[in-house]
Image (tube, rainbow, N blue to C red):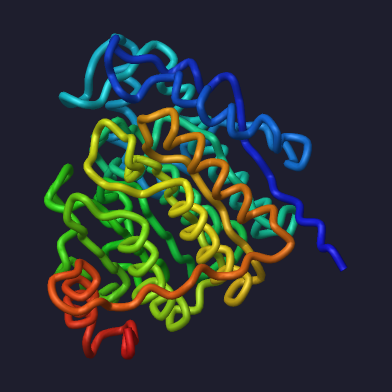
Length: 352
């Protein structure tokens, strides 16, 4: 019997209103590429309107000083909050919409109104810290959504998976001492923003609930899929999340101009399949993808198509297992280091 899945989509022309200086990579045109991938799928997706996040929702993650600073900056826009992060006249409104859309999409899935969801939002969010905008990000959309789930929906244990090519320092910062949120990140390293080394595992009660997998430039499908299979799968099964949120940045794509990774559309399909399988096995299929980075049209198109194919499929078989090759392979070097950093901690990675 074929199962029909209700997959929710947040897509709103107002996200185009956040506009930066000419030549900046985080441009409204990114959403046009996403829209091309969505085109043939829209009739199978349940549209969810974007709604501006309230101060209360934002302040669960960010300081009042940060919200006031962004508000003041927009009042004198166009201007920059740091060398990479701009604001225009509509940026506060758009950033609130992105955060609110993330919250509402996550709540729809948590309540069972949708099986899974994708939010085509901007600006991205995973670099934004409690009191600091950076890396093109104003508010941390995925962190705000996670706290809303805990505060409003009774979801206690949340897995955040971040496969953006840059480390999500803001998300890590938000949950650094919190054992109720497992933050898992794959990222090019060393690279912007400089955080995300192996030994960054959290602190206090949250020690072990941050799992970083720094990867050298040049990694592609085999390395990313192998890391998900060898590290994410056992970590997730040990943690037993009630919901999975994904910071879906597509800048590890081979065509991306800002990084040096080699992931293909097939690679994103495999990663999405693993995430779908984990969601089905561990948390009733509850899986939400939120757009982060991605600065090539091909990467955005292929990545978007891959995650929606996995979300919509009646079932999603896992990709073939990647072996730990001998010698100097990336997996053979990286996996044992991550396991060693978590040995004796809260995550059981034995056998990875």
